[in-house]
Length: 103
Image: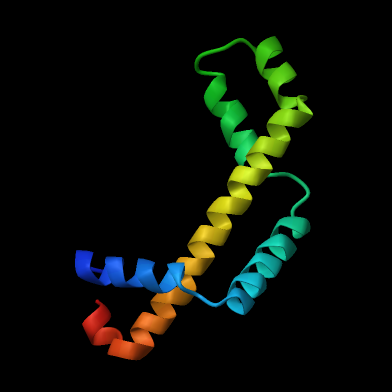
């Protein structure tokens, strides 16, 4: 399903106005998903990308830097929460207008 600009704006408005109980459920779901993974999937991809520009010893130090892992974890969590909120909002939008209107 693709949303036109008007629909995207409405979906974002819905996502921004979700009740606290729904946000708590989304955050709990995202945290559970993240806890199931032993490795943040962003770090291997980032290290592979960095090999195009930097030597292995510098990348190795970066990969072993706990602070970098924490930053990547926070970024991934925020992205997952944002996408999950929008997914819930799209469901609300689709129920409101039907799938034909949302497409």
